[in-house]
Image (cartoon, each protein chain N blue to C red):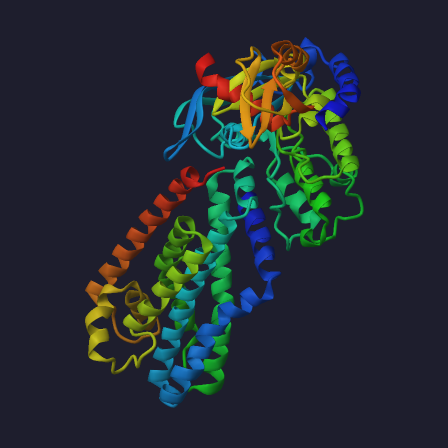
Length: 328
Length: 245
């Protein structure tokens, strides 16, 4: 799945990067903390839930004009990090900053927009009411009709949310992040449950916002989505930042292949990240499948039913995160 | 201030668009009125007035405990609640809106009791006393709203239902709200002063011109209110840290 889309998404990365530059941060120009261009920051942040360590010494700066993708398996700490940025939770230790202040300070949150998770909008309220409710919290807001049009929800103003389709609810939830004319939006799994067309529509809306100088932090399960949108990718696993860099760098990390074969005992092979056995079927995870196959042939071990597949994003990150404690 | 009104308005809309919640709110006190008051004290003006006051306190308790205990607990299990906490507003518009809404629900719950009292009993009251009693009911609602908030912020919905019921009925019975106010059974005389329901109903009785509240009862009412406030604040703060996501 991820394999088949790489070709088309690479082009979109180049198009988004051309519209950006170091000067992108000055586009909105309303803040007072422009000195550094850092809109949000985590400094050595640790967060525990009882015995569970959700974040472990994370430091991260979000600069004006960036489109940052947070990537990692479920439970890696992505949502916890977003919740800390938007003031929903407090760190156990370390410090969170938003526009130079604390995210717990309501005034600082005037510059951000957040998407409610999943389909959690109040079912008895109407579309118009939910948008107006959110807008009432901000000094400026986007005109309701324009906002709904941008997210493909025109004509649904009077509809109760309980009567919307899943996709419409999801788009409304994402639209709410943009109601208050924010400088920085946090989108946690914005397109989960959407069909391909609706997903592309949302991507366009996110790109437009970014092209106008807006800053975006988004999380996603979909490597495709991160590839299509983000220019900077932060990989999180086991509550740590495992990689932080331009998209190409992380695409390399995710280029793990699964080599499966039926056979007996295998010799120690270099370049194998992880070995799994399933009856007489052996799965080898590697970043260089070609070299591994050559070695297998050269080692003259009997095998059959050779199969090479791209790993899922989840598998790739499990592999990376399994290595992490040694690297760190 | 405008945010308080905004939150109040939308919370109210959310509630009244589920009509059964509003009907349920007024049902228990009105039904209790029909079963416990009308047959036994309906013909006696003093007894009927005091018993109507008791039922109103019962309605106030029920609204405070159910609206917050269940409402907050269910809201917390929906992603919308954490979302509203990311909006640029402090906790007070939401907290204040919850309290105003519970008061609105309380008023709605009182209407059926008033109607039953007016139609089927000899209960009487002068307009100034009625107003005074109304203010006393607002004061009387304080510990129950706070207990409701505590339950709502401390427990998941299923536990909250059980705890609200386990709180409401023993307090109503123990405080003497469901028995004859003129000649209560001995065990109620023994436990009532220590329950907030007793202080609440004595305040309303006094407002109506019947007797003065007992000192011990009033002190205990204050203790319950203060303790419930501390518990509610504790549960609200704790809520941030204990939900995993």
